[in-house]
Image (cartoon, rainbow, N blue to C red):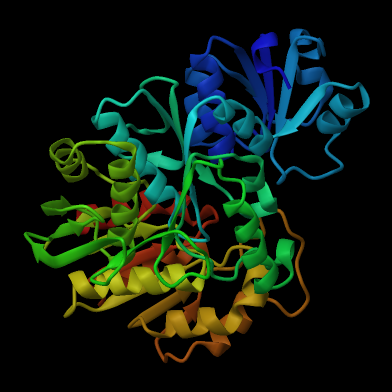
Amino acid sequence: MNIKAVNNVYFIGIGGIGMSALARYFVAEGKDVAGYDKTPSDITKGLQELGIYIHFNDNIIEIDPKYLDKNNTLVVYTPAIPKAHSELNYFRTHNFGVYKRSEVLGEITKQTTCLAVAGTHGKTTTTSILGHLLNECDVPVTAFLGGISENYNSNLIINGTEVTVVEADEFDRSFLTLSPDLACVTSMDADHLDIYGDSSTLIKTFTEFSECIKPDGKLFVKNGLPLKGVTYGLEDDSDYSGKHIRIENGNYVFDLQTPNALYKDFQFNLPGRHNLSNAIIALAMAVDYGCPYNQLAKALASYKGVKRRFTYQIKTSDFVFVDDYAHHPEEINAVYQAVKEMYPEKRVLAIFQPHLYSRTRDFIDEFAVSLSKFDEVLLLDIYPARELPIEGVTSQRLLEKIDNSNKKLVSKSALIDEIKQSNAQVVLTLGAGDIGDEVKYIKEAFSVAN
């Protein structure tokens, strides 16, 4: 793969969050970029505003002829694309250079100082914090994010090309294409069992990722994980630890203990211990890279978060509406901890859309336990994404397992009426599917009412 030798880059699945960041990067590099996606979205609209031609019909006729020059075109695809996709098969059978997104990302980062963030949870928030810290400390960094940063309204931060910050995605073992200088692992809970089969295989693959780090590189590991490296944690004996944690004016304030010093009074604006843990590891990697304390403290205080990661849609004294991407039981637990820490006396309604039949099947009991904690639960049907239905795996089956008398299976069209019938003061929308499309309608309905 010789990225510099081609002028054209064609994306199959350009609307994906990781794919679109790469597309933005290549536009910034002066390449001609085009692509296909299944459906229009806010992401594809943003790319089109950059001048990228995107079509939504899988047909080779739709492709600009200049992208059919195999000597001058790089083709990038996402593993979520079905194997029968006609455009993908055309490029393969005609011997184009066809690569997964992760392979291209590995090639881009190879010639840089690469900081990679791995883990089954926390990747996107940690990556966006780290990218923001380095950018605010004037590091010549390009950060590829798996979500839309509230600070930059983008999933790409560009302030130079000497350093890269990337999400090291375990899905489809994508992170094994990277060779980072600094890397961290935030968590290793069982997930993507459709890929790995069992948790032991997942853990083994994370070990393989740790071996991808350059010989003079460094691995940071959340305290307690079965990997060797520099540890981080909260109020513990880790190499990097958040100490003297308190809440002031609705924000976390804490001290950072490092192997060499204690840095006092960092401010962090996101709720939830899981987010605070993400901030600690981002700080640890930035400190190790060489960023100065004063700039880091100012940068962290200005961090606004990632869209759909505990994003406040409405925040008044009477009514709070939060949207979050949580799609795994541990992520739902983290949201519950955050909302109860911030609003211990308020009644909480959780609206959850399960993501993938296989994940719902594999963790149905864990989902039931996590959701049972809320005061009220509304369930949407399972969002299939790339999967076909699995017999016996339904939202109704999950609903039956939830130990909560205030539970109901609802359609998206009935959501607003159901919320209006509730007396909850805090409403959460949770899930990685298209539940995010409902957020604007809920916000409109209740911004008027509140």
